Length: 290
Image (tube, rainbow, N blue to C red; front, side, top):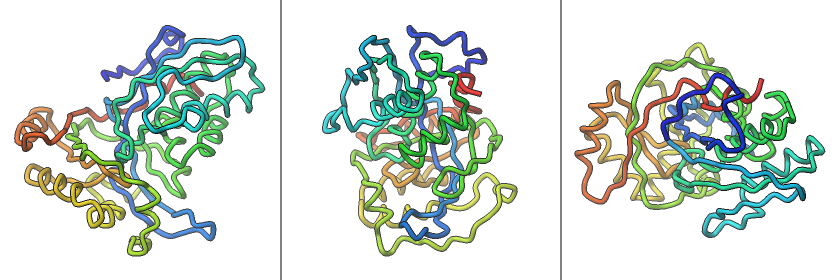
């Protein structure tokens, strides 16, 4: 992906390729459940220098079209299309767009791929359409699209609370991550709907969080229901402490040096898919909103 952070919004135009970085949940605890069924979470989001890429072309007829639809996903229900239309509606904007999505992040992988794509659409089109909606308003739109979308609009590694919408920026050290992609999709609703899911972790404050803290409360459910996740975790744990991201299926380990991650990647069994990425200090499109 090689997402060098751009400090000046003027460097981004219609001809640019707009990154949609992956995220990891460095920890994820379920601390309760609201009356409406939504789970109350605490988590630490980390952006990675690896992800999808989007490009845009303007249309004069007001239409929003995804020219690279994903297999099995109707373009009308794709988060990129929904994000563009939500932005049009909020700003009463009549210009349309063609969207081109280069997909690298797996569906149902727990890396925030669809959420990141939607956030990049909001940030890019807010800029390209000269709407100048402030970041808090873009985050409001983002929350209507999904609980993980606001953090990508927020633009900084963050300690998140609530259903993921209450965000506190956190400075993180430079580190490398080895991420494994089990060849399966995990339905988020299946994990959160499991009766055995732990829902009573004790909350902490952002000041109490430290690197290496906690675990992923969703992992036990995912591992029990998807043995392939368990196998990938067991393999990665031979090199370093490892955990699952989000509701799965991807698992990861953190390394202080790239060489250590490279060595762990070389030790993977043949046929096991993995890749290495640096942790980002901020979202590459941070400059596109204020």
